[in-house]
Image (cartoon, rainbow, N blue to C red; front, side, top):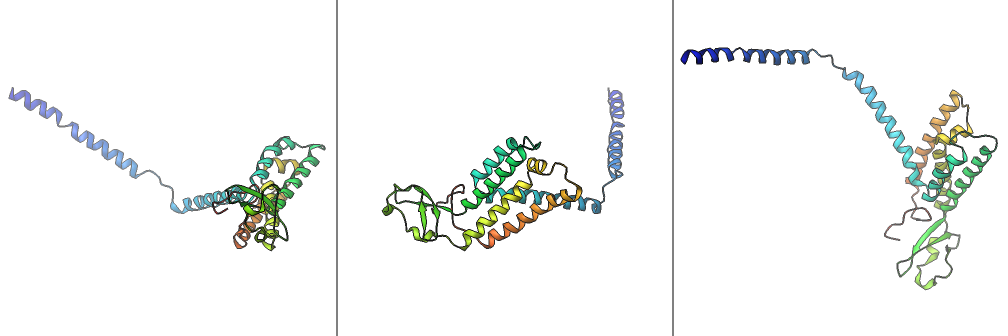
Amino acid sequence: MSELRTRTASAKRPSAPVASEASNSSGSGSDHEPEMPKSLQRPSSFSQRAISQTLIGTANLANLLPTGTLLAFQLLMPVFTNNGSCDSATRPLTIILLVLLSVSCFVASFTDSVRSSDGRVFYGFATAKGLYIFDTTVPSTSLPDLSKYKRGFIDWVHALLSMLVFGAVALRDKNVVSCLYPAAGHQTQEVLDIVPVGIGLICSLLFVVFPTRRHGIGYPITSEK
């Protein structure tokens, strides 16, 4: 029995070096695997971050527009442009739709909302004398002082910036570009790629420099209102 035990023990001993050799071979193989130099990885990651930040900034421009106008643009533009394949009839209709939506952004910048004493929200149009409420049936006693909501210089700035932002968003839409510029050359395509991004950046900075407290039609209403 002792001889059998020594034989089995001696038979099991060689398996340990095999395992160690396998681990050593795997470790040596992993050590000799070619690695990408870090100097080659940095430009690609930096460019990807720059592109992603640009796309995010362009997408965030939609937050500066009225939701109703933006929704109408997203729903009607594929129909008017025939998914980018315009002809002599649909191209003028597309231009008219873009002009109407741009005017909608301009007019919406002069709208505002007030909250009455009972908690209801009423919308109106800012004039030189104050806010003109659309609902004429509401008693004036339940509303705050409407003369504080009169039109000012900031409203004109925001109206102009809203039109520029809408133009930047429209030029980033593939259906609009394919309809208005079906055979755009290399230089024209470069302009269409650069100008909307530049307009969006400048308008975003101006929106920060000239803030507004208005919460008109298509804009969110805060708890203060």
